[in-house]
Image (tube, rainbow, N blue to C red; front, side):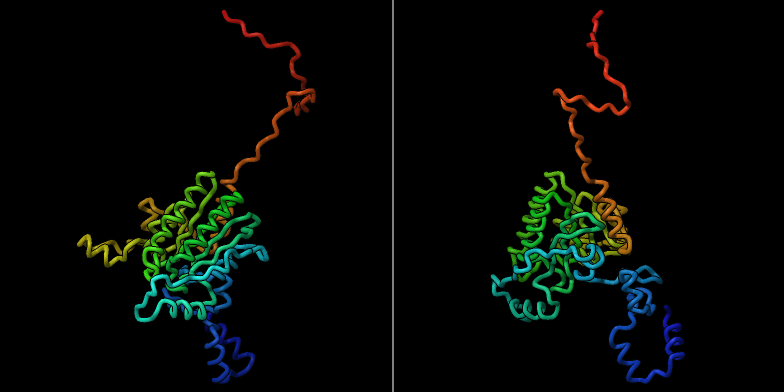
Length: 317
């Protein structure tokens, strides 16, 4: 429904007072696309998984919405919700780290920058981690690393595929070396998962940068990304100043990385659940057939023929 059609329908039902119009618009009735500027009825945009119907721009969404989009209804079981971040360095920049944590937790209603859990994706059991950019830019601290490591270990134990939706600015500077240690810890858990011949699928969303890109985001069996997502390690300006040359306009985009072999699939959000389900089904091990008993029980020959009773003799000339 276009903006013009909406106002036309409202006129038919009666005049709109200024107070009522301002109240409805302030409540988020319409959403303006950041890319093309088109106004879309928020209900329609949500039904299209927050993808602009005009230009295909993927609006930024957060962990609760990701769970709703990917996990079958009433199957989500969150893990490790009791883990809380600490302030081991008593770090302070413009604000004390402890105060920043409390303010962000109150604003987002999240304990830290990731939600983990198990659930059904199109009827398939999966272990899913979703990073949330609202929480300090999705930065990876000790709690994020611990929750993702436990998720991967749970997936390995239960022989389930692991999916991690990445959205992060990198390691959390307020935790210093402890945040950098999470890169190795998560990567070690993934090595054990893949040594067990189990599937790991990272999905890179906008933005995926820093220590997350340098570790688990790029360790997948198949690496997926959303269209136009920014993916990189250092920022564009830092790279240009280091190399002393101008970079392509599409540098550090999902499409650029796919063309250069760093990303396997670019998948629209509207097709993500179906694509993940298809990949998981393609990589499921085939059921092992029951061996034919060599004892007294006779095999049930499918073609109705009986095996030859005489022995087979091999004659060497």
